[in-house]
Image 1 (cartoon, rainbow, N blue to C red):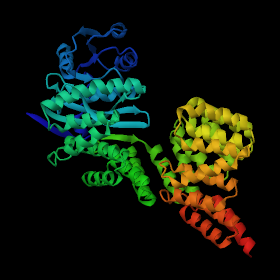
Image 2: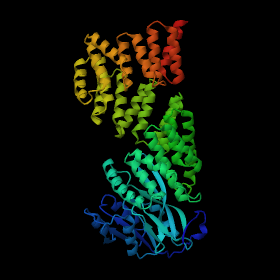
Image 3: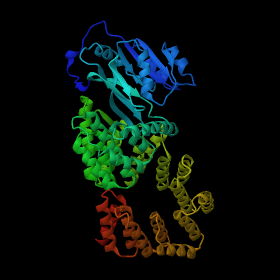
Image 4: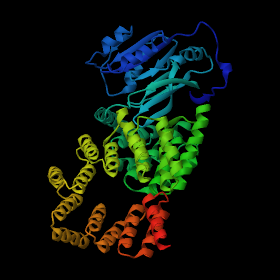
Length: 590
């Protein structure tokens, strides 16, 4: 009979301390694993008594590497089933216990004495280990049954196989590090394609297997097939599971998170929030659900509510760090405190709590100094406060660390342009374009700056370089009209503005560009109309509200201007431009 009964870590009476420990066999299946295999075998060579490797058709140096570490290598044809291959490796093992490990994993050396100690137990047949997976955005933690008594367990399932075992299981904090999810985009997509084909086959054979379904949903998410995630995710959450089945509850949690992610990416924000709140009722302490729900509320601009969930994540995570809990059987966002602090910074910034936002962004960078987004967010915060030297310093830090992306250089260009360091700004914008040739925003900033400093020939050349690939881009057409206006053709610019006002455009940013052009042409009434059209779909943009107030001020309507600057500050108390102009108007009135 199979028992899924867990023995808690604090029951130390089950652990013997005999010097003569049982023997241990490492069992692996491999194919073309020369990249990771040396690291894996080095980590286990002093922990196990034998290494059993089943090779399913390697064409690289995998077999030679395995043999160089003293592993016994057996060749077995691949039959589209991971379990079939794994069970073959078990048949070759002679040890009392098995350590099942993959080539892209490594055993924590400090945990080898604990491993040797735990396999002396007579009270269980299976030992869970904690697997930490390196991800592009952080580190996940999942518990899996990787150590088991030979002859008491076998694998089932052609992919993402499950260990079927007899007797009781013991929870340990023995650590394995998994590196196979932090590969290039092309490598990962190949892996998802292969895994997806096997999962679809497995689900066809057992349509209500929630474990298989959860893995296939995750695979669809990784392939950005959000429609499939939604279709299968909604079906999966309707499958009934026993309330006491911890493993199945974890699968429901994974499905909920992936479904919410897909809904969020298809702009079904309210549905995403509903899914997460239901999941939170089932598991109030889920790290993953707390973070995803916080991000949903952040997108809904419910900043105070989002803050609560990010802070709760941090409180629970601090407790978990002190005393790891087996209740956290699966957590994609296990080490993601840096992301939570960054999101907290975003919430504080939108709430006008600038000092708190700055502290949060700095904490995110302290915890993960390799994420360019955190530097960009702090740089943008400093730019909004006109703290240009600090903005420049943060962006330069990202450059020095070698992690600066196109956004970093774009922001650096904005800083230099504001500081009147025009040549440096132009170089920064060009660098942004070199990193991302489709970065139209950088082209727009570069052309605008060239026009501003009357380098109209350079502006036209840059525009000619990008226009052929963006023929329908109204913002670029607006720049063309601005160049014509600078050359004295006011009529063409006016005609373009009127045509836009008569049409229904999709890209609302054109209203901002034309509004700025109208201010330059001293057509303040038309500028107000354009900015108001933009606000019809983006009512919370404090900068645009402040621009409208500026237009009223230049029209001599000072009370309307004051009201506008006050409205901008209500939206964003940190809007320095609105505050400075309101102070100036009040002084003028007194």
